[in-house]
Amino acid sequence: MGTQRMNRIGKLTRWASALMAAGAMGAIPVAHAEIELGKGISISGFLDMSYSSVSPDVGSSTESVGIDQFEIDFKYAGSDGVSAQVDIEYGEGFDGSDDETFVEQAFITKAFTEQFSMKAGRFLSYSGWETEEPTGLYQYSGTGYAKYFYGYYQNGLSAYYNGGKFAVMGSVVASAFNPNDRNSVDGVDDKMGYEFGVAVMPVEGLTAKAFYIIDKDTDTDIINAWVSYAVSGFTFAGEYNTVEYGDTSAVVNGDGDGYLLMANYAQGPYGITLRYHDFEIKNAAGGTVDDGSAITLSPSYKVGDNLLLVLEYRKDSSDTNGDSDAFALEALFTF
Image: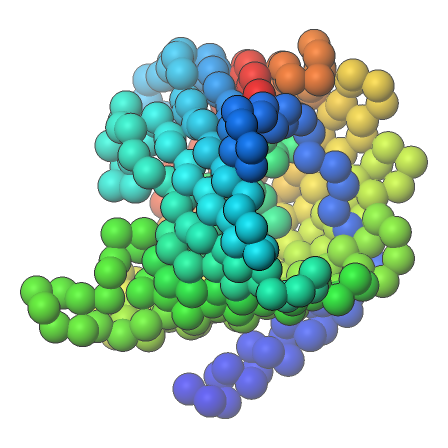
C-alpha cells in the first residue's frame, strides 16, 4: 500500500505542476447580504428553484420543477476569537430522501491568531473544486463525481493556517464521507478519517490546492487537486482526482480517476460557462462500476446582486448509465 500511495503522490505532483500554468479561483457567482440581527448575530442563506428535463437515448424523458434547496445560516461572533455557525437546510437529506429539514453544519471556531484557527463540530470537507452548495457553482449541475472524489460533511476537529500566499489545513473526523458517523457502531469504536490540504496563491487570481483524504474505516485513499486562474472576466479551472478503495468499501479493492476542465466568462450581469468532465470507477477485477463524461454549456444572467438566473444544456455519455441530453433553468436567490 505504501508504494501505491507514493506513486499516487508522484502523479499528483505532476498534475499540480501542469495545472499551475492554467489558472485560479474566480469570484463566487452570487452575493450574500449577511443580515445583522443583533450584536454579533447575523443570518444569510439562499433559495434555489429549478425546472429540468432529461431525455435519455433509451427510455422516456423525465421532467422536474420545484424547490431544490432552501438554507438559512446562523452565525455568531463572540469575544476572544470564538464564533459559531449553524446551517439549517430544507431539501435532499444526507440519506438521499427528499423534502427533509435538517442541520447541515454546526460548529464552533476559535481563532488563536489572525492566521491560525480551529473548529469543532460538523463541517464540510475542504476538498473539491465544485462546491456542495449551488451558490458556489458556475453552472446549474455538478459533475456528479463528488461522491467518489471529495470529502463530505464530517464530524470532528479541524485546523487551518493562512499564511497569505499559502495555506495549510487538516481535519481528524469520525468519517470522511458519512456526516451521521459518530465513530461508534453498537458501542464499538470504528476507525477515524483524516484530511490534509495545502493551498498556494502566488499571484493575484491564481490558486492551486491539493488534498489527501484517508478514511480508515473503509480503507479508502483519495487525492484531489485543482487549480484556477481568474483574469479580465475569465475564470479557467482544472481538477484531477484519483481514489483507491479497500476491502470494506462498496467498491471492493477498486480504484478510479476523474477530471474536469472549465472556462467561465462574466461581463456585467452576463456570464457563460463551458465545462467538460470525465471519470471512471473500477472494481478489483477491472470491471467498470460507474463512469461518465459530459459537456456542459451554461449561460447566466444576474437580475440583481441577489438573484441569478442560470440556463444549462448538458450532454452525458456513459457505458453504465447510458447517454442523455438535459436542459435546466434555475433561479437562485441569496440573502
